[in-house]
Length: 455
Image 1 (spheres, rainbow, N blue to C red):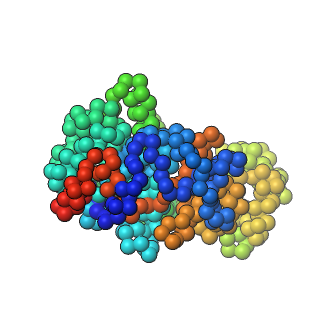
Image 2: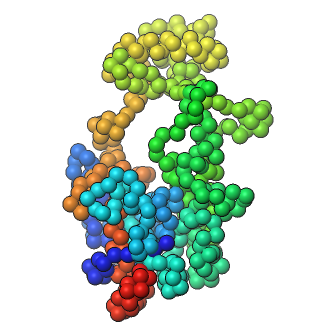
């Protein structure tokens, strides 16, 4: 797909290249060492971080890698976002008329072409508009591929081929190309042409079946599109492996990921238990079939905590916090097997104890005894949480007169922490730059392409 914008003249002042340095203020990774000028990220409390020292981008591990992101929404494009946080130059190729539908998905902002979802998850990208339904657009795209290292797409299998952009064509243009292909079900198999979204992948992959309470309607496992994020994380791993292979051989390859299989890969021993014993795990509410107590508990002040006693030693500590050490004796509930057999009775004891105290007191008593416990945080709680602040997990970034708080960069690298250069870009903000400086087109050629709605 491709996209459009009139801001090319301004964008043309910035030169694009494998070692391009963005002119946008950079916000380095969460948790980076405070001594590294670029390592101190802005937070909701601290305000925006200062601009980094010159050359900060070139020190990042993926500096010199150019990525083309031609996908839409999140599954796949989020992998490009991660690569961009660690120095890759990411060119977001969009349709000239409306761009990526992700621009209109989520909470609206004062920018007509950007929701909060777009600003957060299309960060560290430059937007290039290009119409892949036109022969000239396809021609320009192939030239762009020839000068890039990675291509990410997430269309229904066969779509790229229908546009004349199948692997044989792209591989011929760039034998070292690494191509990530994310789709609902993968590039092969009987479901390959079905439309796929994260919600459907949660269902097909087995996650949704487990979400909810016994005997009741399965619930959506959280409102975040986990499948899109998980498949993109696998995509980023696959890209790094393929780039390593390219370093050794000079040859690229395809990375094929189905969102549903990325979800299924998270299902711990589910497959092994069914394969060996025919066991079908059912919904368990907030509990766990392997440990007791292990769930969510309401406190006296109407708040919630999560407690996870996965070993006998942890339960012994909880019994001490309850001031009932006898509960952890061998004759009562000390062994996990006895707790599992008396699940309802054990949970009732914990429910009553937690419900008799305010959350702050429950937390303190458990933490004093080193019991695994945590608050069930709303986003308001997260903004106030001292640990999130200490780890700089909230980054405040200036964008078009807005101060937008987004999740910080993960993971934290000690020597080469990632950074946020910009939030989701305006449509086509780098089109002129790329056409002029990377593809060597004249200003007159670019104007003609705009007139023809090719860019």
